[in-house]
Image (cartoon, rainbow, N blue to C red; front, side, top):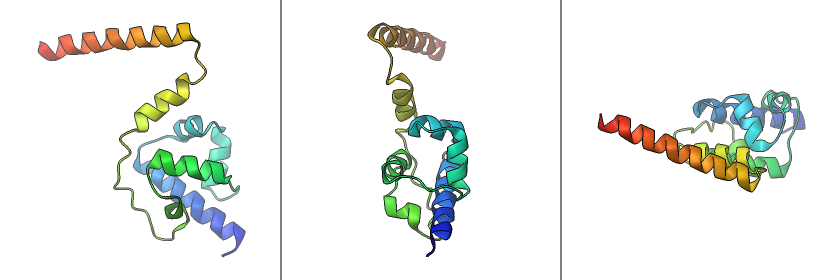
Length: 120
């Protein structure tokens, strides 16, 4: 398979996985620490990506790396239940201790409020 065709196949499979999980290109770009424009180029097969990014993609989508290279393999039925946690982790990676404490307290307050509304 030629490089262009392989890039298009990988890009197509990435897009199908992303769409199946109702992720935006911005969501995926945040997790990969890439720009949305670059992710779009990858999905359209106009740019390749590194093996490191392919590994990250397989972890994000909870699929094997080889499934990103497979024709006709659009098995997106396996839901990645850790997606939201991974997204949060990628957003708070560079937070200071004070910022993390603020996030923790905010989440605790939100949880208490949500529980009060569930009881009502």
